[in-house]
Length: 433
Image (cartoon, rainbow, N blue to C red):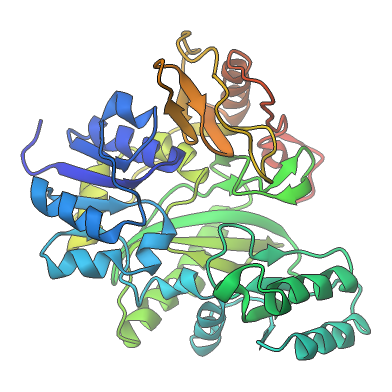
């Protein structure tokens, strides 16, 4: 093991399991806080919650770690990087000021406006009556109702893509009047629905430079064919064909570079991963949203496709110097299927024993834990909505899909459900380009 590669990974999802595996493979000693049943098999779990900033600082100081890698968005928006920096601890992730790109939809939209970054036209409201008036006025001239977005973090529940104007008004009522999301929904962004195909584009940044990773695509809706309510993500694949080399070059030039320059100019240089949620229409990319952490489930497929050293990438970003890290070639294709608990994305049922985890996986397959824990008898049971990400890495996307679904078929628990069409856009010749 190489010296000075002691790392804490903060979080408990499939994203953090993927990060832990990647860092262990890069020769790191890894602790995951708090982790899950899967991370415990590749690293050491520490019983510190991701939102316990004091506890995380204490862990990093006490055990003299070289790098802290923050998985979820909430501790970043709360200022974990700033608190750790005060103690001299190097951390992968943006400061609290830079994390506003995800922490506030209003800040993000106005930032794009200030720096001429392409995104959907929008309006901001903190008064429900005024917002509803705007929605109904817009409905007179458009058959597509405006998208309703809560300003703050809302655990994936803050975006409503309504079928009609009444649904949009009802969302505004729930967010602003009824306070369903607390302070996060007290202000809303109403924006035009963009045409095209979505993609997830991740770049690792050091404040001025950006190293792109494989373009990916996730599947938000709970049911096949993109039906049913939105979720945190039911699966992902990469690379996404909609992000052609020409589109990627435009994303870097028109979105990523002005974002880094704009954040630096506003006194909040961006270090960490910038996850650009894109809408691509006939080769033209526009920003749907910015996230300031790796996507989950996207990270499940980004890790196997990256051929570089994950520690050098993340540590270079944290140090503010990626000059020695070049974009790595993408190897093959990867696809991951999220296996979810009964009741998800509503109130998931937990405590069900998971069968089939000990069986051999097909060649090229991988299994990442998310909502899992060990019960008193030592069995792995469900402990959240998205329970596992089961995937595969292969030469082609079709081969990765076959292997991933073969692996999924060997794992069972009561009430489990998953989508059977992950990757359909890239695998279907009938999908419009």
